[in-house]
Image 1 (cartoon, rainbow, N blue to C red):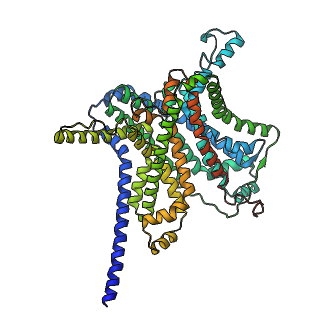
Image 2: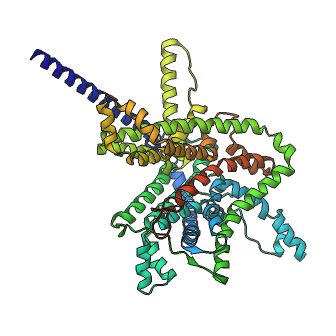
Image 3: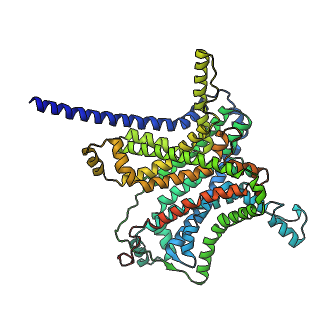
Length: 572
């Protein structure tokens, strides 16, 4: 009996230890989620408790303009990306025409070029002193601007056009994935009821793809709200440009936080309407039959129009900007080498790699903590912490500055009172602040990717590892991480590339006299020195090519039964 009692005590002790470790893991997950949510909460808090309230002045002067311009920009970019992204996705998925297999991946290439780089290139090409208007004047004998009309690139319309070319791949990516997942049977039923290809598209395929298209449009609009380089260069008065103006030029943190809070309302409204639009809808596959998609053959004029419709976004969104930058880099080779391109590249690579590693580690920790506990409160906290991707970089930058400044002032006050020593700035204006901003901004990418990958691992594997004596940390290290290698690598690449392109947050948080490729290109292009910054811009573009290849392969292989012939047998 004594031996049995001792064994029981030992079992209970081990169970208690496991519960303790489990509780500690949960507490750590909640703490990390809270820390990631601090910047967003700090912005709202500062907005309602300003030290220098200039809100009445902002509301009576610039706020109406910011609202009108931001709404107009969102409407124009949303409509343009919907038409191009959804239309081209349907063409390359359901139709057969010359060049279709190339366009499947080529239509994603504009995603590799930041919108502000596209803006710089087209301004250089289309402004009054540019080659396009110069050619028109030489051909028609015009000498002054008053003698002819030409659209102004530095305008709201120009910003809409540039962002549409840069952001439509988000809609294309998700729309094509949705079209690939649709069952042939549903389309066949539509055809047997007398619907042609186009009526089947509008009445069947498009409604079934609605959730994916709405998510793609939400991403586009969030990227539109986040953009700073394009609107700043085009002098378009949006909220993001206004936030940086109040923050950097007026030196008023409270006013910037108040504008940022209004911008957060736009973001929350986007999330709300996206969720509400899908709340009462249910989209289920009604058949398990997945055969090769019908592939409507297009011939003659229809084939030529389809090819042109797919070619034009690729040419305007990627080939022209990349070609112009390459030409500048080759013709101004000496000037580009004088810009210390090596140091800029190392700065960007170092920051992006560091942020990617930390972001993936934090995202994996949060996702695994949620899997272990599974409580709604912990899940909600983790999801709220990962909302940073929906918040513009300028807003998060202010949210990072506010708590770090409070922490620095608190530490400095304590050190002065206790030891008579001033600690000064510990985090503000350092690489640590930039890295912190990047992690909060892109945590959603790593958390979402790892969470989706963890969902594919059956709970029985966790149970088997635990019965063999492995704790939560050991189970994560020995079981889950090897299974999630591909997803973790994908998340790291996506975060890395987004960090390489991030501009507004880097402008605000970077150390003094510290440049990345993005800030350097923006500064030089703003001074009309695009040629001198072309090599730096090309480096950013090159860093985005690999994710484009990965995304293209992913969506191509996303259809159930991929790799099988139309009769259901595996292809040789």
